[in-house]
Image: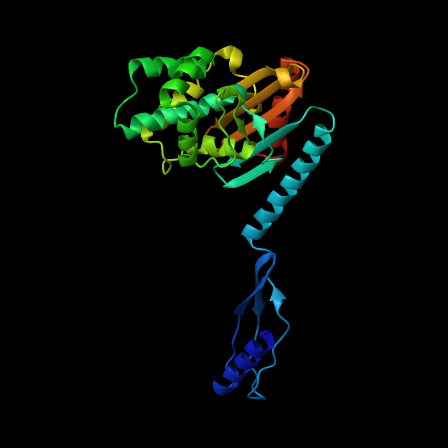
Length: 308
């Protein structure tokens, strides 16, 4: 096909009386994307046919260079996490960089019990339910939501979970939020989810085109950015000085795992140049403090290698 294009170009030069055709571009598509090749045709007074020179590659496009750089970062992070995973209990992590659109996940579809990070799902469902009825939260609902997110209050969560319609209602809300890998349990803390789904949920909480309206998104952000100081570990460990963050953590000594700890953290880091959602899920830790150290190190490693 390429030969035919060149012959036609040469023939065209002859028809035009040997006029030079300079810089005729062609595009060659391969599995790595589109690369521009520029061919140069020179004027010839001795012949009605022009002799083509060899095409000169222009080199990778800025987009191709950016893709290559992102792949390099991803491979480095994969290798670092794999090495670290060999020394600690099981974990998964996902990152979504809203500024660049890049998504990253390590063991992204592995399922974990949520512990208290499920409370973000309950909050989102509460907000959707009020929206559907075209009303604000009642004073009781707002008070329960504040206790649920800021203090991780279990009684407040159970009250909202029950009033909303328990697991069937939360599951319907999750579908609207785009969560496809989450199974809600009647014992809400034993809901199973993935880091990929948790990053989707974090995105839905701030997406102007998503199901939550402006007031709902604002309230979710307010609550998750004002958690009790004793509970602002996890994702915030990856934030730089001056950056803002939201967070919801989960922790639970699991009776079915010899009372070893589930430690989870989900949240978002923002400033003028950064808008990144992070989810780290893990289990089988000997202690709560040990689990916190693991999820914080993993969150920091994503920043170190992805350079957001």
